[in-house]
Image (cartoon, rainbow over all chains, first blue to last red; front, top):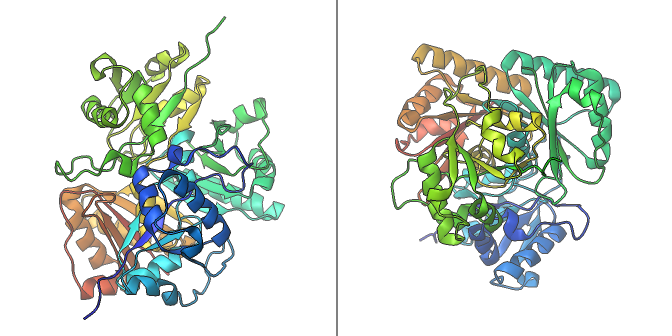
Length: 256
Length: 256
């Protein structure tokens, strides 16, 4: 007889990863209590980063006491993959799911937002499906969707394309390509950047896009000083504004 | 002197719109307490549907008492636009934002999930930006992102394309086009369907896609009986399964 299988819960993290201490929102401002309760009872975790997971669980514990002390939890890190890489041959992840086959629920968590979206974890989710383990994604903040909603750009069809090339010429070529794709498909195009390159990406977008193209930038979503600015490239140029270099940003463009 | 402006809050709704009574999750299972608190104090609403907004606010009131009775709130409906329409000339929405210009915060809410994403509201958000009204998107469940995370398909780049054509021949042609786009760009392609057409869309996908293409379907996300099934088209064909006709579903495909 086989024991009933555990589930793989995709546990959303907050969006304040790497942000200044003290600027984090209260956990209950960004995560549903029901999600915090599930996180508090899980004994097995697969994480992008064990240290940030322990920090997350301490915030959970302050709202709903953990079923076991953090030190007693099993927290295994995902194999590292290059962020933004298009395709990487996946290692065998089945061993990370052994606890679920033994009947224990497992939490998958990344450093910020939903795991497996613009973040590692998809390969583990795929492995879970292959093993017949039920996958449950729990609701929480997604910077991509919050940015899209706050942009006022077309939300009926959109594409997220990850990171742009770092090389200036390649980046400009990619921006022109994205603008052409937006024109052809009517998609809003969303992209992200490492915070210290926020300014460089904004400058490249303003230098490359047509004046009539709509551009929106959301910085520090869910943080106290977060903001979204949205307007035509011409409006951005007429009233230049800087971007912080220490909080994550999501950039969106749309040709209307 | 002008008074300080109010903000436009994008308030997420639950994902149980139209689902059987009694199957709804507890509000605190899907929305952060901080979001419920903000919703409880807002006196001005712009809504996809006033009736469902009042129902939502009654659920809010059960967790955090409303600052004013529901009957005393201003709830104005957005002008109706055809769902899934690519481009519609927007009416003048500035009058709906008058309260914010007078210093009152306004909530924008749709019937399910985040407003302005795969739902009406983007034009109002755009109008807010044009009027210099701060826009704040509040975290909550998004069926698109939850489905993408739970699919295990590529989450580093993806496109949401809304609804497929209803006509069978047009729908098949569009499915072939999406498969080709997924192959070319490495995008996961996400789409939604009206629940009573879930089965028809699944049948069309299985009949049209290549056997090696990955297909994922998430039904009833955040509901007690919700599930995600993910595998190759060949695996779906080898073990057919029906889809409920009364809960929303998100379909995802990826050519690997």
